[in-house]
Length: 268
Image (tube, rainbow, N blue to C red):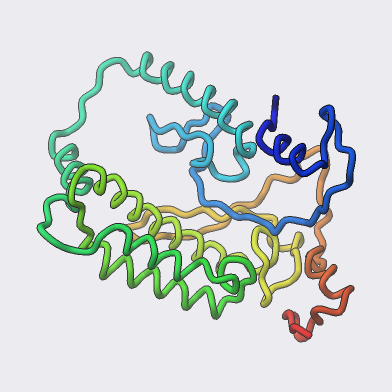
């Protein structure tokens, strides 16, 4: 009932019978994952009045994963938004603001020619999907990827072109992908440790200095990054404020795949 498709695949592979595993299956540790998202309170309200977020749009610390997130945060956000509307009553939005947002959203359809959204999507993927950028990271490689994303942002997005409303939807998704890629790379470069990503140049999980969240704010159209301490003093189980080699790097070192020299990973 909970995971029907995976269980069906396990049954076909002969691993499950009568809803029970009858053979062991291979298991491996998953790499850490970082996501960009909106910071909300327990009612799923953002700091911007009237904005509510849920699911994959949330900052990681505010949500559960997968279907659990859909089933919980979505319901809370919906109820909270409805109550907020009731409390606000009627409201007006300046016509100039509506026009500005409409012009921005529909701009790709106003051009007679330009760069198709599929080109933007592939360019973003080519910048951030190589394994030595997406999976195993080093600041020098992330910086090169960021420069590619910034080039796409500054020189290609202004030429984004859509044939029709279908392509307009894809065009605006492409815009969002560029924004998220930039936010990811900048925040990942700012975190000088291995925790949410695997960094070859900072292989230690640093609870002494990096029990922090990274906030991103809009300052005059630019991303401004700052840090916020995780309030571990309020937690019933408190992590030790110590620095240690991240467990995946520790395992790699144990089997002789890497060694640590001058605080960085060296592949054997």
